[in-house]
Amino acid sequence: MALEQLSDIVQRCQAIQDDNYTTEDYSVFQIAGRTCIEDGESAQVLSIVVDEENKNIVRCMGWNLLGPLVQILLKKEENNLPHCLAILTHLLEVCSPKELLVGLLEQVEEAHPDSIAETVILLLQPLQKVLLRLGGRKASSVGMALSTLLGQVARLPVPQTKEQEEDDVFNLCRCCSALLVFVRPFVEEAKQSRTPTPKEDELRTELLKFCMKSLCEPLLEVQLKDPETLAESPLRNFATEILGILSDIGESLPDLLSHSLLRRREVPGFLEEEVCYPKESLASLAYLLFVQHIAMDTFPTVFSSVFVLQCNMEYINLFLSRTEESRLQKGLDLYEKSLVRVEDNSLPVQLMELKSFFSVPQNLVKVMTLCPIQHLRIKGLKVLQLSIDKFDTEAKYKFFQCMLKTSHHAGVEGYIIKNIKNQIDIALKPDKGNEWFMGAHLFPLLRQVLCLPQGPETDLLQNLDRVMESLNLLRYLLIRDKAWRNQTGIWTELYKIEDYYMKPLRMGLNMSKAHYEAELQNTKDNSKKTNAKAESQIQESVCSLTVGNEKMPNMTPEMQLQVLHSALHTFDMMESVLARIEEIIEVKEKP
Image (cartoon, rainbow, N blue to C red; front, side, top):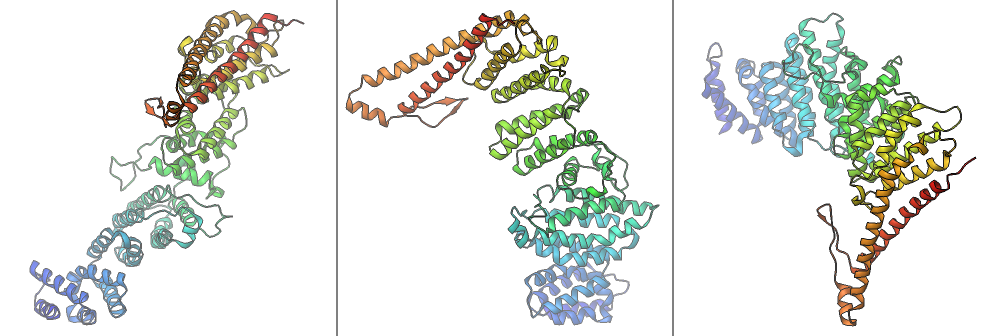
């Protein structure tokens, strides 16, 4: 029935002049042709399509058959496959390339989630053939095709392990490799002319869009494997080729990296409000260059390591401001690789005035304190120390001041105070003196260190790391810098330190110990008053504890006693160091 309808409409349309076919003609041809192909009558459809007398009809209406043809080709039905391939090949030769382009991209966009990869790979070659038929008017069409294809490829899961990439379980590797083959003739066309025409400039712009989008998706999501681990990596090859295309179309890698702030540039083919160089894409580019060392042989060596670090700080900040493990890992790796290129004690204090040099440490603190992934927290601490080592003395001083003021975390503050102690130790060595960690400059920093946020009522347990490192620093200063020498000026400042730090701390310790000793005694007394049966019930009962408005796991009375003993032990430890400091002050060692 459908075959008869198709034959009838074709025969009737043969008599129509100047391709004046009606909407009904198109509809009948499409429905009858689709039904014939789906019913397995593709051989008969092929004979109608290739008939020279039907050339005009097929040229105008043939692209409507793309949908059923693609579905049969995806199913790979052996009986119909050769005929459907022949029909598609003929349509690509005779139909309007613009209509074919629209039809093919519709099939890509409408691909079932389970057959995205198969659809993309099937239609890449037909799409390439159609685009090449457009001649010099293809730039915007190439851009539309690349955008549609990448949009679908980006929906594919990214392989996480070496085995997944080797087996290409999600077909992402095949798609990326096929995309490179697809885009190559357009890259070759764009790179041939040294003085490009406006049309060639438009093509370069569309290829730039493709590269920027590829750097973002899928490459920003991919964790590339080390070449020693995976010698043949399709995804690493894809990244390498994308960076190669950027160079081929005249984009300078150093110029791309130096876009520390997104700025608009007049580029043919871009709408005025569009951003030509997305920050995420440039961050991905920086990661591929400096961490994966892809295309590093093309990167000029004349750029100083400090300049490279400045360029990368925006991208590092972008990575570290996210919460996804892959982004945080890339941010930490990029920061580390950018820092190791820099000489120790060389970063000047002027860099501290740049916004990124303030934002990156703040985000690094969040990684170290809030990230649930242990190895990233450890890596964050390692990179923090590496960054401290690279600052010159004045920059270290300013950095410590900033971190003590903004980190709001006792563990981080304790770590910074330990670094301050190390810098003072270096300053006190012969021929190593510097003005920033001795004398007048040291006192403002010490006042930040030797500080109880809420005075005697400060929660000493919550601030344990900070308080212990502060006491250790004060003890070290009094032992290392004798009163008769007083190189740091600590003995001159001591009476103030006693008033604003040691006395409030002593008071706070006494209050805390008294409170916890009373709680401990109260808990013990309650236990003694119970009989054997009640005691058995208590053993099974639990106490709840709330910290920071969050209910913690329930505690038995025995666990509560352990917590109270641990707290009292902590207070004893603080008191021991404080008593040693008071003893040193009292003795005042002399030559």
